[in-house]
Length: 485
Image (cartoon, rainbow, N blue to C red):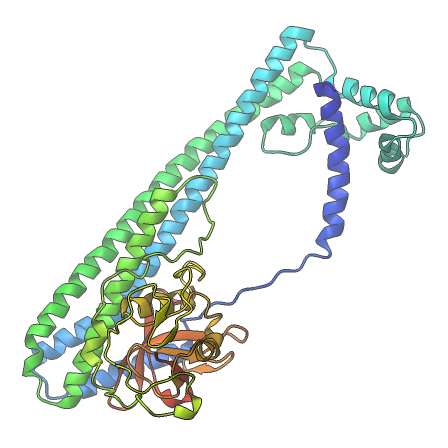
């Protein structure tokens, strides 16, 4: 089979494909995967209330120290999350701009190749040779009687003879090459009867146009890349400032006299450390994506979590570790799923990362965190529990399923929070009145601190949050289930 016959068969194939695609399109359905939603009016109100509460707790505190605590609170809860979101958006814009430039360059190279191929054909068989008509006539002559091609002639052109078929295909431009990213398609679909010189002129015009587009898009991609780098630098500067202010607070914290002020300082310090972890995770993700970038994988999402949670903050929970005491040790036993007696509730725990057996039961850890989707709540719960040397499985399920899965594996599960516990939200359950867990998947987080008023500070993942991890304070803590050991 020669090239011209293949070309004409491609035309027939495209006609069939188009009909199939249109028909199939009516039956296609998609499944939307919901993510955690961080931004809401209720959350804004909660933030404002938290700020007012912080000021009240710091009443009577030295003004310089109070200012340090408030500055750290602003860094952790406003400035760093906003800077991280801006950096992520700028990075995505950079990838999109580069992808567009790459696609245009590919089209430009294809157009140049078409030009070279056509120029070679002109040298071989002349400028007036009609490629399209010759190819259609050949397939008509070879396949008309008793073949699929004859059926296609009837369906597509209603032709009753080979000659009629050729003329009909010519007049309807049905013998043109299939639409593609190559510039030759633009020329041949205009008129199948145009001669080779006309096609060559059209290709050359398209090359000129594509070259202009490629130059403009390359400049835009370079600008977007620089903007992304600037945003990342801004984030790193805030991260350094966060570390500096935290150190300053640690040196002054001993001068706090009231219990409420001490707790406020500890909560703000822990939130700032979580912000630093989030910034570190964002920097690692940006570096990973930059190193793995190729035009073919832009925009794809990987499900591997790797070390995106970072290794910092391994002992962050200790600052509030005693606030909850051992209150969760043996309470809520009727909802437990494992043997709790004699368990050590100190955080970090004593399970090396990836342990398949710990605290007297199988952990369910078989492939690490690779089974959990990027940035989702389940991945963060896995990473954070691993950082704290607490047992965690590879296939705990969606957020709402963690408690039931854990019971089945022998973990101790109850309704009493403790630092390091996985906090499980049922499908559609209110998350502290701030937002609602996904109605299909639920949500899971990790308890970072149990506060004096019974509320808990949690860290959590979710693509709807500005940072990974994110954090918030949840009241009515006994309304939720907790996976301990």
